[in-house]
Image (cartoon, rainbow over the protein chains, first blue to last red):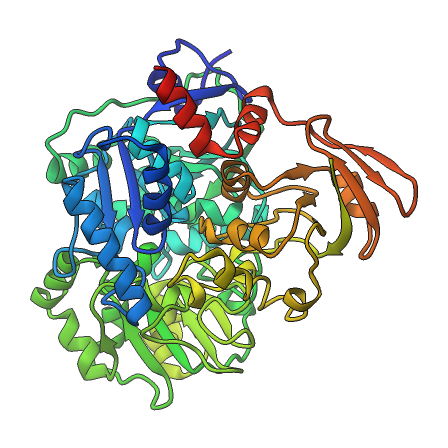
Length: 421
Length: 164
């Protein structure tokens, strides 16, 4: 029986010729990642193991991005402990405020993941790097600790769902709309324990930023990982960002999938996920009249340069609604700088939006844009669970940067076409 | 053997409601337990008793990878979670920190709030003492049982690294 992309990568990293779904394997890790919320727990667990050093100081990345710049004294203490750990164990890829960015935008930008890698991260959106043709998955702090000590992790080899993409996205439609459409279709547990493998002729019509967004939200369908077949665009991205050697794994022709979905990108419309699950999707024409109080554009899902460009296209020469707080977060310092050089920041500020330092802040209700009781936000983030962005009785509507920017202008959830005529 | 009274929830209980991010500036189990389930059920903290069993529907623990979620549940006194299915990161985390969990759609659907339930993790069996019904859950593979026996992944890794 043939293997999927994921199965091939796992087999290779476990030193096996062949694996099948359900096999329990131990795989060698190319990168172990943590942030300021999950690393403190991992450090405590790591110390309990009693080893004197980490397995490879170059294969660990620590990014303080959640409650940074420190939002309160307790967060500052956590960040301090993480910083001291990074110094003590000479962690090469520790990124301090000023260098850092939101981890899942930063790690690929720094060239720390290449096709064929196996990556674990103590953050659920670690699945983002599947966009590069790597096996990459979120774990908890204890797995991170064991990974830092041993350089290995145990996995149950997953089955896969194949998504065959065809066609080309319409104007104002992006990777975010595609992945929301898919989650709406298969549900928040539609890919539970499984791989989501993206392939097909349409792949070439998706930018790397679109792919990062889509792989990022594989976890919102319950998936173990999302992975994209490597093509010229992937290679170009990797060569631009990394010196490391890479391996391309293609699924065998006779690989088994538990389901195959054919998706025509040309048929996808701007899509919004209503509270309180990412599967509660409606296309923009079915949304109705939903007034909003806040717009958040950014996060590990949609804080990349193309996302900012899409928002700027709509906000250029316009003003945000006087009662809509519009908060824009470039995901990394590099993206921030690029946005500045391209004049995007000027457009945002003149439109009446605020531009923030990179942070996960509002996405998880940490800081920098918390909602009060009864308030509604349109966000380009990834989760709209109860209380996710603040008060348990607030609401988050997930959408693309274009829809979020259009909504900021009108004060209610709106189609980009409604604003840019 | 685990035995306790049931507290029941529905589908897709996410880690944001198990422990909201506003409390993640600490990982002290007691502090986390004081806010466990807060945004879903504000009565949980007051009514949970040591040994109680949590029963839930599909995709329990979906969302964030925060290990603070199973830590909070464990520290609140819950002895075991029975669910139709678990989100995979939560599943790993629970095993890794030694919080017993068991998948059984039939048991998780039948068993109701307040029932008295007994669980045998090794056998994967569940007995409802209130109704007398017995269910067969999915037993853990041997490898995971070893982790559970060692009271979590850290001890398991430590034992193996010492041997090597």
